[in-house]
Each structure stands twice: as C-alpha cells, then as structure tokens.
Amino acid sequence: MSRTMLVHMQVLMTGGPMGLFKHIVVGTDFSQQADVAVQEAVYLARQHEAKLSILHVIDERAVNYQESLPLSPEEFETLLAQEAKRTLFETFGEDSLNSVDIKTIAMFGRPQYELSSYCQSNDVDLVVAGRRGDSPLKQVLLGSTAEKLMRQSPIPTLLVAHPEANGFKNVLAPVDGSEASRDALQYAVDFAKASGANLHILYVCESLPISPLISPHLTSPKEKLFGSYEEQMKEAFDEFLEDFDFGDFTYEAHFKVGKPAFEIVNAADSLETDLVIMGTVGRSGIAGLFIGNTAERVSRSLSCSILTVRPSEASSE
Image (cartoon, rainbow, N blue to C red):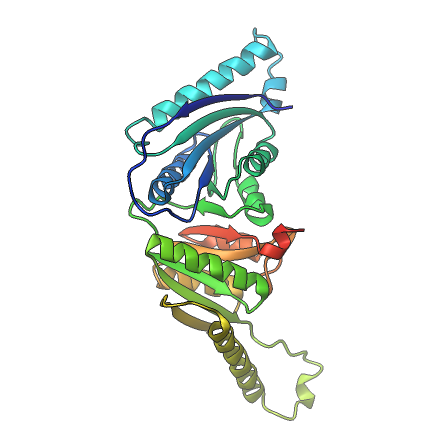
C-alpha cells in the first residue's frame, strides 16, 4: 500500500475562457527532461484554467534496498519524502507557479502503478511526462515507462520534448480512416481550437505489397496497379474528411505514400510541427495502420512533443 505526503498551494486564478482540461497531472523524477514536462504542464494548466498535480513517486524498492544505511525504513522514507518536497519547491517555485491551483505530491510505491491509480482516482483528464528521465533511483518515467503510459493509459498522455511557453501553434494529426483515428482527430480539433493552433491532418498510404510469386502473372503493369490503389486510398481519405464535422474550423490535409512512421516524422519536421496527436488502442499501439511499435518509433524519432489519445470504445472496455 502506498503512502502519500501532500503539499497544497493555491493562488487565485486569472479570468479567461474555460479550457479543454480540468485536472492535469505531471510526473517528475527531477531530471532535466522532467523539468521540461513540468514547465509545459504549468503552461497548459494556466492556459486552460486547470488544476495541476505535480507527482513524484519514490520507488518502494529503493527504500527496501537501503538496509546498509544507519536509518530505519520509516526514517529513510521520511527523508526521501522531505527531499522530494524540498526539490519540488526549489525547482518550481511560487513565481513560476503563479495563477495556478497546484498540488505537489510525494508518493511511495511503484511509479507506473501509483501514477495510473492516482489519475483514475482523481478525475484526471491529461497526463504529462518528459520523453525520458535520468533519476539515479529510476523513480519516474524512465524511457519505457513513458512509452507504456503512451500505449496503455486510458487518459490522454502528453510526452513533452521541450516546453512551448506560448502554446502549441502547429498540430499534426495522423489518421487512417478508422473509428479510432476519428476519435483522435476529434480530440485534435478540440485541442487546436482551445489552443488557437493550426491543424494539419495526415493520411499515409502504404505501398501495396505484391508477392513475387504473383507479380509475373499480373495483367496490368505494377505502376498502373499502384496508381489505382493510391487513388482509391486518396478518395477514402477525402470521404473521411467530408464525413467529419469540422464546423467552421479550418485545417490543411496532407496525403503521403510510404511507411507510416517515416512519413509522420518527416511531415512533423517539414511542417514545423510542435505537437503530434495520435490515437492509441490499449497494448496494440496506434490504431489501424499504426499497429505494433509504430508509436514507439514515431515518439523516439520526433523532435517535437506527442500526445496520444485512447479511443472512446477502448476506454469503455
């Protein structure tokens, strides 16, 4: 059972329209990359007038392994919790946290489980994490932990590459025509509207695979066959967009042929995207075309931040 030490600091909110988020949680291990995530979480909380919980999970295994220290387990736990709170206030002082309702939490347990449990028990609607961490105790969000959050979290999860003090301005939403990607696109539209960002929608058509055993027997040239297939996929993309209710919101559509991971990363770079929003389905990763480890490959190769959204039907399972 985890033990939690909590500090609550509240400053009156400034006026403005209500945003997309009500309660944001950011995990920190006090690494440089985690500091970046906290900065972005503060920006978003201020922009959307959301509550912000800054969570530091002290791995209970780190406590169990300190048998050689001249301290009791309880004393060592208290020492770690005090250090966690002190570092939180030193790193993210009152000036930088102005106008935001903030809780700083030091918690004992297993990082991924405690973070997930806290989010589900406290009506959290966005989890923010650094792309990687480097805490000596490996306490929170080290590489694979962040990726597990990205793939499995039922709550939208933002992995931050670098903070955007003025908000995200260029958002890229890859889609594949599935219902899962439709859910993610709706989230991207809502996010772009709330953030005042430009929205780019990308459809990646993978090259049609043709077995070398079948190739000699084709009645049409490969080029003609490929062209017909790409035209069908382009028409399907156009129909997908036509069926989507954008209201009066404007966007730019992009159709590419190639490998999804490569084309997504390439488009993000060429369009100077600062955020990619993609749909996920449980352990399978990205929906439809983006199954398996494509999400991980995209995340590791991106120079910008990525926000993953689990589709509504998966969330209700």
